[in-house]
Amino acid sequence: MYRDILTMCWSIKEVNKNLTDRKSTSDFSIRYLKNACSVLAEMMRKMSKTMPDEALNVVDKKGEKKSISLHDVSEMLYDPRKIIEFNLIDSIGRWARNRMAA
Image (cartoon, rainbow, N blue to C red; front, side, top):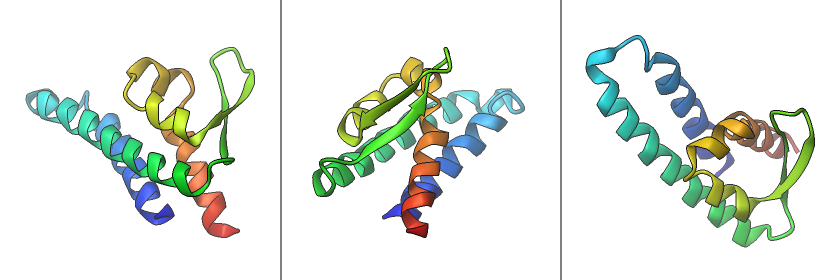
């Protein structure tokens, strides 16, 4: 599951990075990003059920560190402002990479 989460995070970052380069596909890219975040949210929701005490460490725009439950992270993935504010995609990717290494 961690590898699937990492793949989804990579995919989201790549599409987001290329969004401004390809104006003709921007509508498709935005739909893809919304769908990909929904899929990632479902993955995180499943993880939260098997690991109810697990939390994701994030840093907000003010530089403050916060710990957010996986269930709450899954809900935040539906809100673009929260994704950006907490740099969720990178944070989820780091978390999954660390869990794979453990």
